[in-house]
Image 1 (cartoon, rainbow, N blue to C red):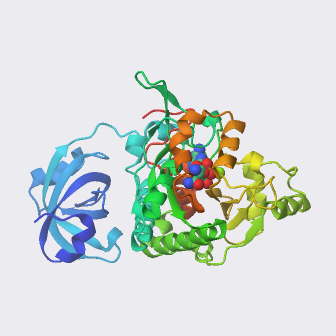
Image 2: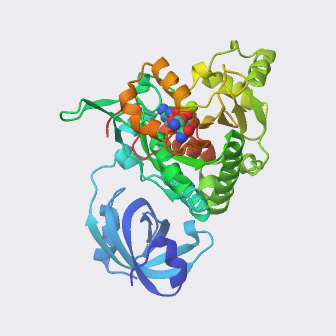
Image 3: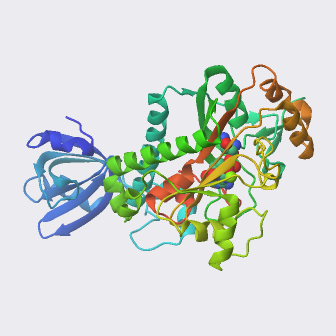
Amino acid sequence: MFSYIKHLGEHVGAEVTVRGWLYNKRSSGKIRFLVVRDGTGLVQCVLAKGDVSDEVFDRHDKLNQESSLQVTGVIRADTRAPGGYELTVTGLEIVQIAEEYPITPKEHGVDYLMNLRHLWLRSSRQHAIMRVRNEVIMAIRQYFYERDYILIDTPILTGSVGESGQTLFATEYFDLGNAYLAQTGQLYAEAGAMAFGKVYCFGPTFRAEKSKTRRHLTEFWMMEPEVAFNDNNDNMDLQEEMICYIVAWVLNKSRAELQVLERDIAKLEQVKKPFPRVSYDEAVEKLRASGESDIKYGDDFGGDDETVLTNMYDRPILVYNYPRKVKAFYMKQHPERADLVLCNDMLAPEGYGEIIGGSQREEDPEKLIARIKEENLPLDAYKWYLDLRRFGSVPHSGFGLGLERTVAWMCGIHHIRETIPFARTIGRIYP
Ligand code: 4AD
Ligand code: MG
């Protein structure tokens, strides 16, 4: 009978076969130990001389790290064993003897490991991070599914700038000029919201970011809900509720992984509503009063400013109503303060920075056209987007959650390159 390691507990006393790779091995007198991984867990397999043929017993010596194999044996409960069960070997088949494995338990530099990312993914730390990522994605999808949002998959090849001309990847598109890799699905999600009321998109997005920071990738995943008739406050309420849901889900499902990552769980348990709401104006005052930032009124926050600001709180904060000049063209102008837009960023605690950017959208076609012109964007490419303001325009709002930054925060890891299976940064396209 075959079993994944995760399900060995259902087969105590029975003989089962496990298929996987050698994680570790050792010897002690007439006993040989193999720790096998199959992606769902680890199990220690015990070979005793005399219990198996000498030929099978000697196969232990030939196996090195990451050799692929198939082990058959009887399952015993053993609280001291990793995973809680041990396998007493009755049979051992070698699938392949691996070449000398380049990643060993000793310390390696990050660059060395990133070049071996295709193999590094096999390590227990990477397993923990990818499992947390999987749970964050499941939490998001479930959250929106339970609330009747429709998933709208937005295109990756687009004809218009979504966020800013400075960070566009362009490619030739047959006879039609340039196409761009989507920086956001938002503009299309807005069309979705006018069709279905509440929608979200969730896919890869691209930024030709020149910034080499621990928070920037050139390809990252973004989840973007868009809701008709929501104003900027409704939008912040939604963010707050969704983040609490995700954090609770991860605390519930990913305890073991958070332990592997040595995450301080108490910090995540503090993430409860309400999140402090701080206007941009107040945030600048607080930063200047702190003496740790030289921000000028009207500037966007840098990563360091965000860290100083969020260190004043024990949970995520919502900074709202930024100057129009530092934000994208589609944001709705503040009704009393023409220099501001109705928007917000959510800044995560513990220095994880901006995990969400959102806003109410400009629904007045004249104001929107003026902003498109002001940004020197080609009006033609936005004709369809302007149609949304001509045929039953309504107030609407939405936001984008950066998946990798959220996973980094959940896991408590410094750099986001480990939160995506194959990171793309300014200096990396391999493997
Ligand atoms: O603030 P941003 O640029 O907002 C938008 O793209 C809007 N269109 C979203 C919307 O309203 N529908 O990006 C949203 C989030 C950021 O808060 C951040 O978490 C993440 O996406 N992000 C990045 N993550 C990794 N690497 C980068 N280069 C990122 N740029 C943005
Ligand atoms: Mg932003």
